[in-house]
Image (cartoon, rainbow, N blue to C red; front, top):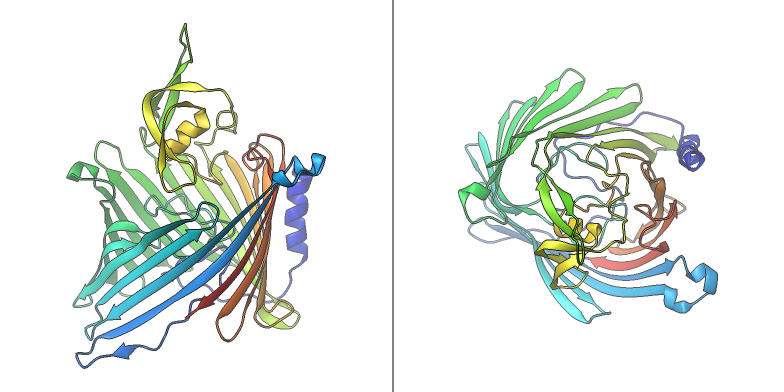
Length: 446
């Protein structure tokens, strides 16, 4: 296992050489691990009142295949799953002459396997400012919070985290009120009040952040607070050493932030599983290093990134992979991949964790290592190759991905991606039983 990890990192490192790259904008937009082709915007249509309206969007058709490990033994076609879906995205951007803005990201998904059509409002917010001293965004939105490449332990706000292969459509936003007060070019203060899923002030979650530029270091301190819980404290920073950019972020979660479980043995029937709040605080830390390189005489053509993640709440996989059935102390619901939740009175520990929102990919173990490599203008000027890998060092399982993306001048995008899972049996990336997944996508943006 260790040889596979170091071999993967060494291969990435041996492919690169060349020039430094320009530092990313500190307050730029969220960056994807696999950079999808951008959605073009139509020209703004302005009416006589000085209001501009800019619709844009995309339509993507995707075909997925999954090859189970058992297929390589019996060559049974039933061990190869198939799923097809079509994803439509509509972005509506309305701006006024005083720089106010209204934005909506709407999404529709049709799945051929169950013939169901689902609709989503991913983002829906209003932007305005008070004499450019205070900027306000109210509604459902995706925030820039944390500066890591793949893991963002300091981000306790956003609903949807990154994935190795970014899905089609818009990212799910969080409903709330964001306030931004800039003080020159080197200092920014943020506040976000998160009211999703609550009907009283007791359910309100508050986050505050102060960002500073101190010489070559860009740093931020943040705080997350919910009623009846102690605050969670976070820090992140980025700087440049030589030709490499380094980022780091950390959070200390308070006690009672997550739910553990206790097992009550029963004389008859199934043992009972019930929730118990964590009694101690817990840190999470992510450290990343990356740079761009000149490759085949083209500046910044190749990008290499390494990242390491420590999650003190990880359980080494010994509990979530258990197949033992327990009786739940109270009924719980879980989404089983359909549009309806299923209410469960019994099940495994992993199903219980998923129902509590505590099963998150790439965060089940304590220690992780990852490498990311992308090459622009690969073979063709509009083609990008991306190779990524994540290793769960705790249970010694891993996933490697490769994707080839192409976009024409007329906004046609094509992508082929493959995911390979391996490592010890019953690990995070092997427990599903799948060995290989493939994704084929074709889309048009407008």
